[in-house]
Amino acid sequence: MPLVSYQALRCIIEHIEANRRLLLSARCRKISRIEKSAPLRIHHMWFMENSVKINHMEHEVLLEDQKMEVSRSDKKPNKPLTLRLYNYRSQCTVKENFSRNYGVEEATRKVVDYLLGGRNKIRVKYLEVYRNAYKNIQYLFGRSNMKISVLTSLEMGLPDLHPIVEGPLKELKFHVSHPRDFENPIVRTAEKIVVGNYEYDRPDIWLETHRNLPNKEVVIDTVIDGLNDTKILELIEYWRETRKAVGSSFSLLKDNGNSIETFLEKVKERFQGTYVKLKRTDKSISSKINPVSIKIDSVSKIVIHGIPSRIWPTVLIKVVAVVASKEA
Image (cartoon, rainbow, N blue to C red; front, side, top):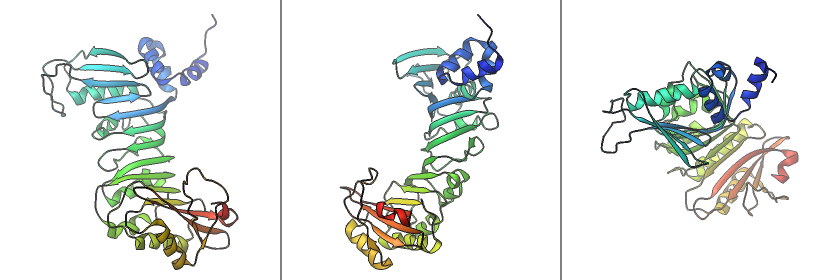
């Protein structure tokens, strides 16, 4: 059998599924160094409080004896913890005790470092960070970096991830704990942001914090208490005055009692807009209500869609080229 060159082996390893690579590296120490130098491609990865899931394989630190209590700090239990590997495809479980009596956090850190430490080319399509799991990513600061397409952060507020995440993101889903979160470099550079929740109540500064967001697409996927039609109209006014770039869009859920038709009539009257008859079906816009078009200049317009719903209707604001506005 002919020998495989270093470069050829590195190229082959790069395209092996992530969990198979990790297993191969663990069983064959001679290729471990080569394996870590090649980009690690992961389709979906989850960081949870005491576990990491890579594609279909979860690595979880747990205490087998349910009668023993261990706090979430690094307090050491009376017996070694267990590392549970669970394969979601085959539904098979493998358990192995740690060789030393680590605390939960220290054991989790060892697992994260073993899997991802020392890798400078981690490529992740979808990354989800659950609450109380940010500390697990911190272990990798200065030791690894990741290129991520879609990041979902369910932490209390957006953590500081730029020491490890190579920007920009294609999409960021997160909860906002303070208006300063919108100044985070990861937020500012993401192509699309989706806000799932606000952990503060300041509708009075909503326009100030949202009107200058540089993202191509902004989605507010939660109802904002106290946000009235006037604020939405002011956002549209600001976009018109500043000539927002073609391709920009902003959508939000509308919570007040007026119907979406009434809101669109307000838009038409205030900006002297016109109703646009849709000529084609956009699967992303499930509405039979004609949108309102507002002229910005000779090359672009703002088109406001109203999408009705049984719960909360959606207002979608899009900037389109004049030649394409009739098909918005």
